[in-house]
Length: 113
Image 1 (spheres, rainbow, N blue to C red):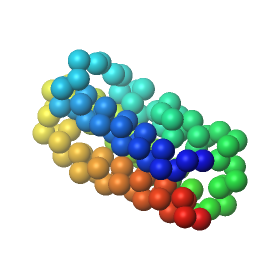
Image 2 (tube, helix red, strand yellow):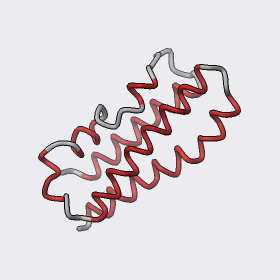
Image 3 (cartoon, rainbow, N blue to C red):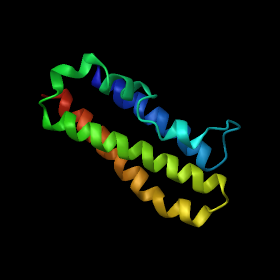
């Protein structure tokens, strides 16, 4: 597993989602797709047999949880923005960034294990 590559991919995915939040992207995304933590590259790895070697690692287990929460929060924010509930959406943005940082931190910890 190339953890540096996964960190970079996660940050690129986060940037794409941010562009959906602030409408700088012409793309339209379904919140149900954004909130699914199995669809991104990292999620595919987490839920594959390739990650089995890490299943006893506490950072891996934490990664699974924060990654899932990150996607759920992204889906919530996108739903609220699409419904015109801008203030409610913005209320959740700090959590989105905190969870993203936690994903990166877990990946960095796994890298040095």
